[in-house]
Image: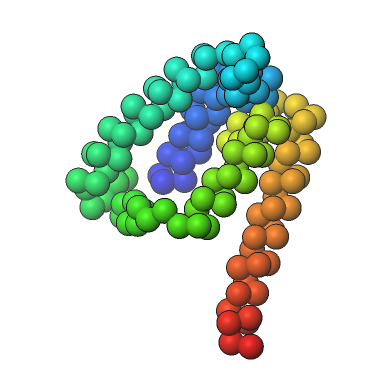
Length: 143
């Protein structure tokens, strides 16, 4: 049941990304172009998502189990670390250059957008590089 719920939730999220225009890199870049022809429509999408997210996290923190009976997995730390800042900056740079972030890129990939193929390949390469660096850390610390 949990996998089916995850699948349906992901499909609903993808449909929402398509309807809102978040999977269209031109629309995203128009939103990020504050000095040019700014498109504020994504601010409303983000505001709606933020409102839903705040309520959902508020409700989730009051529970120990999900509606499916699974344990709640909410991040415990709210610390801002250099690692978080660098990761956020890299995310923002990638979003600004490509007009994609991971979720919308996967939706655009499924819709056959050629730019999404390049972005997703680069994203997977970055994830693989991160894993290699993370796995090498313990070896460097003991050497």
